[in-house]
Image (cartoon, rainbow, N blue to C red; front, side, top):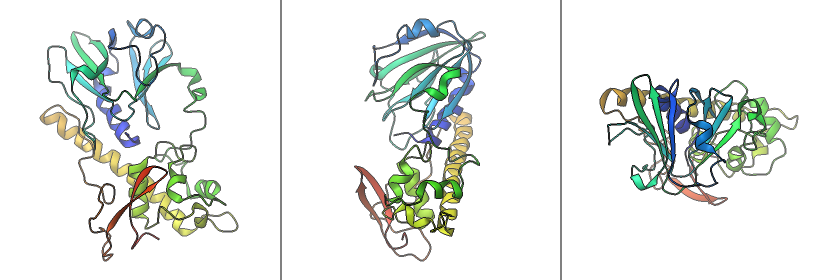
Length: 298
């Protein structure tokens, strides 16, 4: 599933085509994705100008001039691509770790946009149809169910070791599943939890509460983990931004996840921690794959 850096890269890739554009027509290829489209969805959007593109956690926000916001989630297989209306090839914002589809039969939503004399199409493609689009009044976004209890994002100053200590205190729950709880940190997903724990040399199986002192203060390991979480997300966004610029200059596609991961999807490979000598293992926690090195992650 796309994680925060991936969605942020998609947002950056779509912004030049969508921000300031007028929606001439919205074509829906079916009545639903994971959920039905809002009633009169196309009619409410057509003729409106897209003011800006935002993001909250793993959700893309398409903000319209009349105070409505399209809340979009990519699900497991969703992607957007931008096409000049005379161009059948198009470009795909975000080259994902798992390949995305350009098969036209999975083009479920098409935004036909006018940017002055330029006409472009922004196409949402989703073979598995786990994504969705909702329409929400912008002044009520904080009440949207998925946003109501979100924790701080790992990109801002609100994510601190003291904050995590307050959430970890007394928890016997494994560290990895605690970090995946969106009420603790918004937008942090499986890939980057694995990567951050590896950087911090902490086992995903370790109880979260063991990183907090009896007085409820963060131990040095939690201070380090907080920094590693912020670093790994910042590095991923920076990599996406760099790929974005590179690919715009070459073939029009918008790259992401071009680098290889240190532990994620690296089962059986030597651990990259200098001097470790261990091997990356894969285990399953709460039905999800966890990749880590038992030799250096304690």
